Figure 1 (cartoon, rainbow over the protein chains, first blue to last red):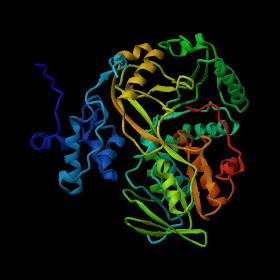
Figure 2: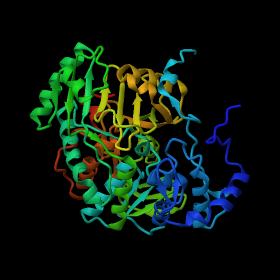
Figure 3: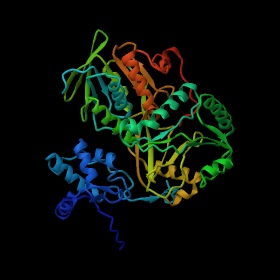
Figure 4: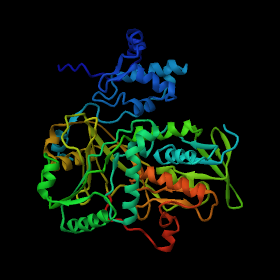
Length: 117
Length: 380
């Protein structure tokens, strides 16, 4: 069986709880990196929130968090939780941005080589 | 919501936000901007981010030249890094017809003070070493063309406008525009109503819908354009690569990722902004033929946005002749981002002073009835 450490099927409720318990303490520091692909720190995300960018889409456009190689697989839930906290809402009430294809990065050569219709 | 506005702008993309900023900068008070989603959620945040001056008509060249001049100082002016990178545009000619057209374009551009040049295939290869020159007959290059970050530029204008007192309402959808004696009197939204003598339609892909609210049929339609972006890689090439006949544009951003797109001529006229695997495959095939190294680079994301097309692929600017106070900055046909700095300045001049420092009267909506279409040969 191929094991891929970056693969998460979908953000399940259990993952959110895990992220909450496991990472909430570290995410309070400004220099903590939240989006590992794009090196976005908690400080940058906090500043975006304080400027009034309180949706995941806006934070993504503002900081590039979630736009890297893993497409937010790691940071999306942490940011969602922080938005919920900042806006005093439940995490379920925060709009999730469109999940864009592909699910995993794919080489252009592989894409171009597929001539099957 | 605010009780009364002097201007209501519909659309929180680059056009709406830059007009808001320029109006406020010229001293206009009580400006309101309405956006039904979040800022830069439409075409601006989805665009290819290129900025070029290489056009085939005098007016487009002048507008683009002045726009670049503003872009060059924009980070300073707005106190926000817009990540401008002037790596040039390398436009490849694959047909004799293109060679002839490009010679004419370059002569025109040079006569207007634009630093464009007609270059040989060898020179093009020097500028972009990984370029596959097979089939390339010649190229044009303008080193001051380039790229800016559309999100940053949009937010830069927004935040500068807010500092000047502009009220911005996100997630506020316009429902109705009220007219009295053929003049705009107020705008109703899902958050309340704002009385105003002036409404600016800057709704991009949805500008036709705004037109219906004042009872006019605007000659624009929307069309999906798809784009994909790769993972960030080491610098491969600096300029935007572009071809009209082979229909592509492709550029490496300062961040290292490579963005590429093309226009599908069979795309239906509607509001679809989905993504298709057929696009990703064709795009990959097109670009690998031009830069073979790209076959090793991975695509991480694809998306699409709406071009707001006009009958002659040129913007429609100015007041509507039948509805007083209803201004339009629409139909940019894929060039809204690159033209926004200059167009917004001219729109603000038009609204506040009644005249503009660069003539834009040829871009009025009446040109279609008069049959005075502007034929721009160099568009994707």
